[in-house]
Image 1: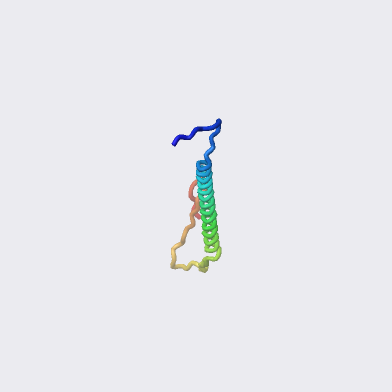
Image 2: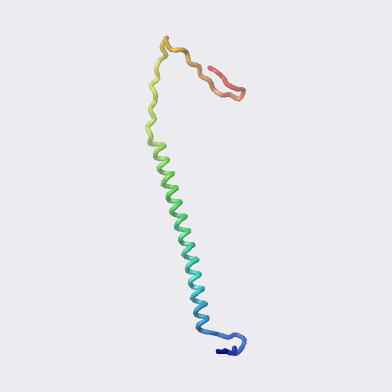
Length: 92
């Protein structure tokens, strides 16, 4: 079957509807991908904040036993303390 175009702009209602539906579906799929990526980014940020919070809690609530200072006895050898200086090591 042959159709003749009347005028400069031939209009086919079925073709226009198909094109409109295709455009609508493409836009919806694009929006779905953007929303999914945004949700993934938010979930990743929440997980990172939870990990950071747990690390801070572990850091500040951990018990650090302080060794009791004891006087050196005569039997033990003397221990020298060394520290790094700009000119090298200094032993005290």
